[in-house]
Length: 280
Ligand code: NAD
Image 1 (cartoon, rainbow, N blue to C red):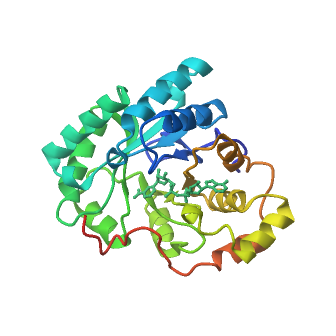
Image 2 (cartoon, helix red, strand yellow; image 1 turned 135 degrees about the vertical axis):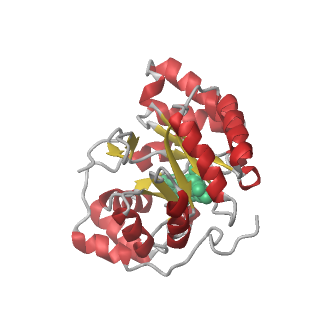
């Protein structure tokens, strides 16, 4: 049972990762970003998800320093994720990209580093770089993002260390059941990106009815649905009241029937790119 915002899932290597974190995709460097990350830390979030391509690692790093100073928390209490971008996939290139991210963030290690997209022919070499960095103690856990089952199978053929995480698009319109089942078999923790479908579910009548029944918002219902299925989730908001709202999901439990109603909203519909057909 997940009962607080600081509760963690234990990854295959024993590292503990918070079930709920803050995403900062499309938040530009500046006061909005700094305030969002700091208010998340102040309100109990312990996990922040960024990426090199978001071009906001420096601001995230600054907010982390300030957030830690203001709350008195030690660095080890936070779980910081970044991702290597497609242009930097390759053994040497990925090692260099990691150093750049680490410097921008102003940290001396990352909690989680992910291969952002499964670029064919490139992710195996990048994975070797992640393994090197992991063994050197510079990353506590390594993983992938946007990997379909076949990408994972290919990676597992040459990987020395299994990915601990697969961060994928997942929300009530894209429930990813097969991929989740495969990851469970392989002990790979699934993490949901765009859990709120980038705002496209807030007028859904089924979710509205469930939300009304529990006296919760649709965002809270979806986040709770992820957590009850053992999925790590990282909703994005820059507004303090929504950052608080999205973390106020530990005082109710969805019934099995309501969980199933949400599952049934699946249409295999993506808001982001298709990992089997992208050109970047
Ligand atoms: P999301 O599904 O988290 O939705 C964010 C949108 O919902 C924002 O417009 C926000 O204003 C709105 N919102 C948030 N909370 C709300 C609330 N309580 N009430 C009303 N509106 C609310 O979308 P996202 O940002 O795309 O995904 C979350 C995170 O996932 C990102 O910030 C990023 O860290 C990560 N991500 C990863 C990948 C990847 O390829 N690995 C891709 C996209 C996003």
